[in-house]
Image (cartoon, rainbow, N blue to C red):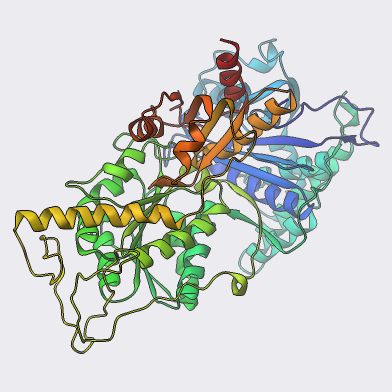
Length: 625
């Protein structure tokens, strides 16, 4: 049993076939409005009360030639009446707007699934661009799927004929026509989407607004008459049993932005967020720019190094400095991160990982920056490393990163990834007043002050705002005396300071929750250990396997360095430990080095998230060996 079930035949459109969950995928050229289409279907499904998870699959090329496989953009959503953990292993329904979309996405549709094809874009020129030497709709090469050929382009032009738009602009409405059809298939309400269109376009472009609404309605009406196509009918997906409250859809970028703004309020301290645009980390800056009223100042720096140094300067001045990037940018920030460690200033660094090395695949997901986070700077440069497990968890982990940074006067790196950043899920909006306050104490008492005197519990030095009377001090990247902060080249002092910096990070392990078992027994034959966005597929795979009677447990790490104090004892209770991660085994290597126990890596570096079936197969193969 996987995350979704296959669409089953029904008696006709008058009676909708009930489904517990379904996966829909939209695919087309970058200019076809695929992400907008998926986003609106997500909102409609959320309003219908479904639990959901999405996967926007962007092309890496900014302006790939129209109609080529390099420029295909896709959006997948898994929605249902039960808990949804992933965007789905394979689609039940694919809407392909051109041959390139069909060629690159058909294999992502489960056998027996439905592919709706815009035949209006399947001319000789479009087929050639996609690499077809003949039309696949004319042979049996697509026999594994139910093909629904619809001339969406032609029907869109007919639907908006009275709009006054030229042909090119009129064709841009075809994504809304297709959305209307899929809305009918799954019983979605068109009204919120129509209202959104009118709010977005009616004042400045009333003709565009009217045309898009007309296309949406026409696609929906077409679905009502599709009984002429055998086997095409509607489906009913029930609302999920979610805890009561106010919900919104949230992406990882949203979660970090809202979490950082909440942390500024909870600490009652100004926050400065400095970054340089880089895919897929940029959305955090885009969202934070709108939250200035909540004590957050944003700054787009001229480069990555400047962004990190601005954030460090803000922390020196008494604000909470935050910077953000992806792997290549984090590499550029490396020396500045060493400065923050040496100066012992609070700093939050968000790394939204992408596939590497170097430029790699900017729009694809990976988890290959763990070594960089834990060890990737010159000198012994320890810092704290956290990892959210989902888009909504980014909110929680942003607050936790700030808490640790200001309490221990230490940089904290948070490892997200491209999947978490762009995926969305329902989020129960918390009452900020109910969240624990995190008061920040700046030292103001001059008597007995020594810049590097330490709190006996946290080993953190005091945080002093520049200009505080009697508390003038110097900090910097050159080694300092362990008490006075004066420049020191004394060998013994350097040993002491190095030990302090490591011990301070190690003490964070005392201040984090003990590691728990997400699912399964606390001892047994096999445990899966994951981190970051592997949470969803591992959780569903373990749930499926346990339902079959397979003895397997799931342990998911959100604290990657230092590791939880009880983790070693927990892992010792299992005969085998398998570590699925989207790299060549970095967490597995870290665990081996820490616990001197055999661990096995399950590696994937395709730029795509794990499938549930891949993890299920890996578990079965180990237990059957």
